[in-house]
Length: 116
Image 1: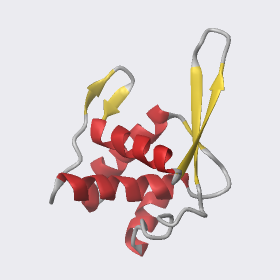
Image 2: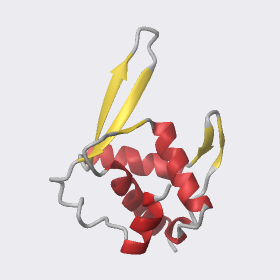
Image 3: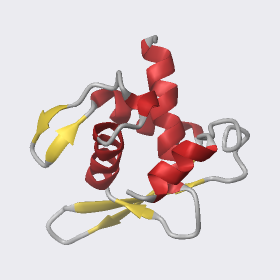
């Protein structure tokens, strides 16, 4: 599989993880959720590379997919700033974006992800 296809596969999972009424909070949480999906056997993520990072597994490829999704308006990012300049990010899918329905997991994958 190509790097581009691997990134689309990661993006499809990001779309599902941010779909719905409740925002997904935290970049670290998204990284860990995708890592767990890969670790527990979500086949489409088998080539996604993770490395050790400050707060756990980290994939630059996944981070790039998230940055691209935010820049294109596919995923909305909200930042909450705190006094010590710390920020907390939350993510929600923009259901009106034309790619929101294009990037879908199949039924077995959706069932798998719902159990995470």
